[in-house]
Length: 151
Image (cartoon, rainbow, N blue to C red):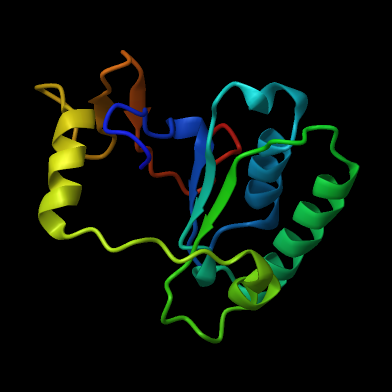
């Protein structure tokens, strides 16, 4: 959150992790983040990466470092968000050298920022909600049993 008017990540830039998140979903996001077309101001995010099972966490580390070393994209934007209290997470250990502590924002600051940047259109279904941004982009939250698989 560098500026009040900066756009939020779009739906194709965010993967919300659960214990059921599969390796392929993580790999696809990493490939998008480190591919040639990713430099158009997109910010790719893994949310709740500490919830990934051990095997998927290991593969996240492998795919990221393998692709980062072989990528020709020098200024990619890839963020991994974890719960600071998840001390037994493989992801936290594997990426410890890159750890950044975010400054504290109180609840009112966050709510104010979201009110400025997110608007819920009227008549939106509760399962998939679209938020209209100031830059006329939409963010959609879609919950799927097989996300990233076209289902």
